[in-house]
Image (cartoon, rainbow, N blue to C red; front, side):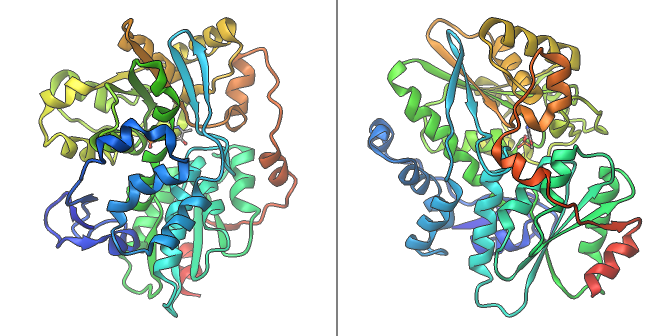
Length: 427
Ligand SMILES: *Cc1c(COP(=O)(O)O)cnc(C)c1O
């Protein structure tokens, strides 16, 4: 399968190159040349397939022959190695829990799949690849875990000192092996700026790549759990509406790809916090990115969502067509906390702030009699412990995955400027 740049100024390229490069030379993100729907028969009989078989069917055409079948199946098995349960919260609403993986964030899926693809593509290359990633929290942990032990791949994670939670910091500073954490004296934007500068620095001779959410190998496997949820809910015979708490809009865009492959999903709701660039665009047709604002659902504090252009492409840039199957609503922190309480009071379910924003999206959409709503719970409440415990009368038990890292010793290299990063990369 070949991919084209959405800036249309770079030549089309293979899946392999798209994975290794991340971004095209013209700075555009990649999009598949062709999307072929899966057979109606497969969708109709989806309950007869295992999750691994479903994932293989969903992703196969996007990989093509660039990874042998047996290897691709192995990568899928390593990626889809935990449950994606649906937990009913209301009569017509369920939470799709994506947080049962190793770092308890949905990003585990994309990070592991990408790591394994990159390891495979670099298998015969003497030269190691260095993955550079800036994180404001969840991405770093998922990438560190996903890439841990990947042969021929080194990972350097930049994170803002004092600006990530204790759990998140432990997840990215305690693994060792091929993972190095750089603790940056600054904010997330400084980390991101340092990464960007490194990519443009011709004196750095290492092969650099990024592991952020625009990489096709991180984006596409996120389709899997929309299929899994459909498989579970098919027998309800209701029309499905998915609400996805959205920041960079990669997760929801993967769901819309699944729909394009023929998965019967009636409507998507992109639920955001006050970073409302997309909700505003749907109202007035003007796409106006702005600086991000800090909120309690901070993994969605994005003012210029990088994957939205892919959603537009799926609808041939036809805003009216897009609006028929896509809505987007923005919610404040007060509304989010209020909703966490309401969900807890009515059902006993503990939603963390991102999931609560997703739930709010379904309420605002207004489900009809024949519809069933699913919101994606993108992280475990323990990842946002302060907000959860200060909002709800609960004490969150620390899950095993987190206990394992919390007592390990933090190892990080301090960096206060780009020169520190460069010195490290030139070693
Ligand atoms: C990354 C993240 C999101 C946003 O996902 P996008 O694909 O960027 O829209 C939502 N919730 C959590 C917990 C996240 O870590």
